[in-house]
Length: 287
Image (cartoon, rainbow, N blue to C red; front, side, top):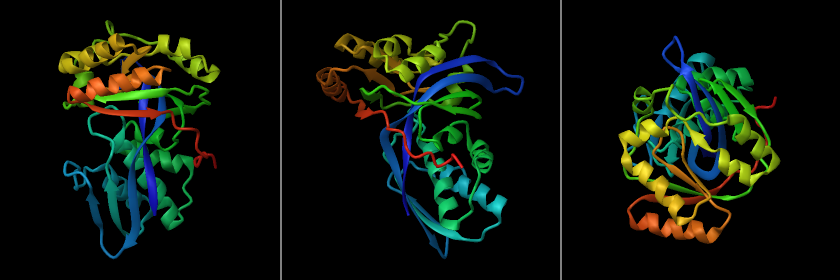
């Protein structure tokens, strides 16, 4: 079986406060994009896992193997699998690559073994792996709240190209949250972003984008702020960091501006890719 694991971007990320359990209460607008890893999964006599990129961990901490381990514990199956991960989404990018891989694995094993998992079953497994895995199961634009455990899909009516620019360096989510001052950081209007996308209002959309983690991530890696500022100088309508970084998103309806920015960013040695919003998929989780 071949299955795609779509990357996600954060268009609005508002950190509301730090909870008593040590996690942060979040309010976000996430969107899947036309950029993905590919997983090839089939039943096999032994467990075999390989990936096209050397940096991918092949131990129990890998999100794909962790998903299988959790499913094995819940459902008691003895089947083994041969898995090849064709990795395209960069790591430490704020694009949810590892989370998307885990979500795709959960879906694939469900199909292969005929487990007929419910939405609650999906959520139980996903939330034990990380905070983005549950959202990545939907492959739809959604408002995501809490610690990632509340996902409310909505219809996006915007259609515009997006430029992804990632410096060579990366930032861990833990480090970005550690230095965050919730009292002083930006708090974007998540309602406004969601309404703009639902209405197809591009002007209001680009005016509303924001990310509470930008300030702390800029301190950790000055390249992120430099990229964001340069994209605006080149002519982007808006530029914002995705997740905890380090990928910066550039928005413009003018393909020429995106192409110009792509050339400049590539010359500076950054990872660059032009994408679009992923059109709504058939909702596998609406059972």
